Image (cartoon, rainbow, N blue to C red; front, side, top):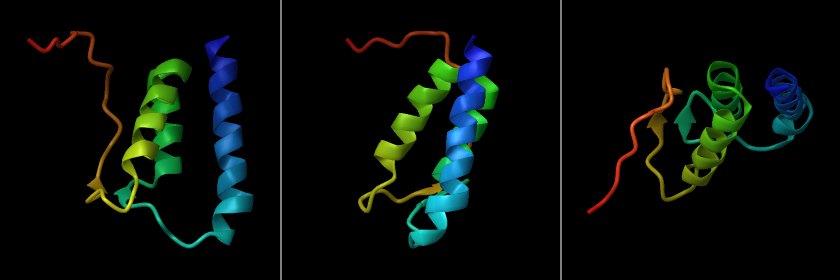
Length: 84
């Protein structure tokens, strides 16, 4: 079931890249671009974790961010970190 969601999400991003993105000025402050990052996150980590990383990336892509190289992590951190 998750594979179907991943394929759907990637198809939606590809449609965005083909039809909407060319109409907008280049704004992404990161490499890879936010849409390429999202596709890679979905393919590497699945739908739910990929969605979380995608939302987090989009929130960080703003005029107040430095940007730069920000690759998708190879795995999801399994260890929980708690603040004291």
